[in-house]
Image (tube, rainbow, N blue to C red; front, side, top):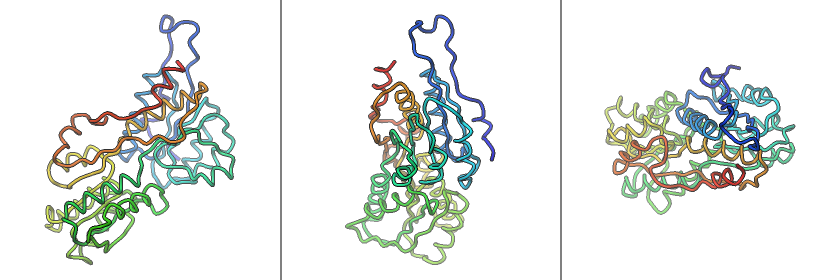
Length: 330
């Protein structure tokens, strides 16, 4: 198990004399365990976490694994955090952190990748709030966009992430829901582990097996970019539509230049900020909403310039119920 260098030092803020009145509450000590930071999505979540920890003057020990295959390593990182006032967890799968969270009685904030509620209940793990994208709606939005791009007809492929990842499965179902009522036909369905190179290889195979393919829907932007790489190598860039999901910086630039057609943007930076707010509020006794949907936006060539200008934050207003809880709790 390794810890990413940028995350080895706890994010903290120290109160100096004169910074606050004597009655101010002691800084919250939180533990944060994230997914692998080689993925720009989780790196943005880390940056949002760090930014909000500094803003709220909390002490946040942030850890991340070096690979999204290191399920046991991530669980070990949760155990190594020791006693904290609250915890933020971004699990790799629905169950890999359940055992490590079993003895924790302080507030647990689950971000982005949901913990399986049945497994948590059996283990006596109580998740106070979940913050993440409505993946079904995000997928539906992407599927509807593909149907519009192809004028309701053609063959498409669905490219998912990790086989056991909850988010990926829900996004694929959303893609299919968004295509309902059209004459689009799913001719291939593969998993590429949220990996650009694996997605490129999978797309090359699909292009050989289905030369009349009209579009690819990818459950992440890294995979969408890999598909775009395969299309360029095959001389079919611009001929086959590509829709991704995440809203990472490179994907936004690819939309601007025409490499991919659209993405359903999530905002992991906002997720990180909300998670810290929720953790701090919960540690101070606030009642937290059970679930908060993070903002999403369909990005195309028509609005991508605005999205790039605002990145990594949304370019439209969004709801943040934790901000009010923090103000009330001081």
